[in-house]
Image (cartoon, rainbow, N blue to C red):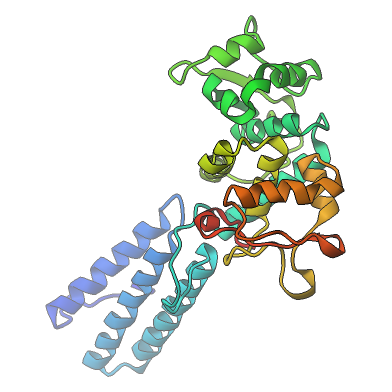
Length: 319
């Protein structure tokens, strides 16, 4: 344990067993496919308690130092986990179950920046389809979609938008499958679509793994399919703005940075949402009406300032 041999005759027996089990637990943690900082912090706590008792039993000052290091590591790990999840460390204020971690929020913003600069068509409906299809195919260039997916994202425009993406070569459907066929596909037999620019061998625009891809896709689906946005019949521009504001919000829901950098640059927002800069205020008004933004957005000084509604905070990108 910690490069130390636990003596077979160490007393009390409960300490010897705890040290042995703790060594096994650390080795098992190292074999995990994904880190869990909450679990790691608890292991460090156990190590601090066990080594403190070992020091008391043997009088070995170096064991006491090891216990202090473990206690410090537990605190640091908890702080890292709180920062990663965007939750208060001291227990004050509400603990919000976030859909994305901080690192996943960074990946989400990278995807949005990639689409803003490289979308094959300029219209909002096409941009929305490109976003959702990119997240389905981000790792291998191939993803599955159903007619329910496409209809939910694009409503009555789904067939036209899908066909336009095929026509410009950004998207490939299976042989003998038309855009109309794709709209009829069901969950038990989805349509497999291909995004050539994301196939292996092409330059990789993203570096995230399987778990993060699924999490980002689910996050975007939650935003675009928000019940209140659907009820207000929010169009593609407003839904893209909902995605952008969620991705670019702090844990408290405020948009953009703090201080002089508060809010989001209107030109960047308009560019991503495929709307004119002067139309951003109107789109933001739709989000207020749908309860996505908590208050009327301020678009003065070339920046969009506002705050996500409390119900939307789980979707914050944790700037």
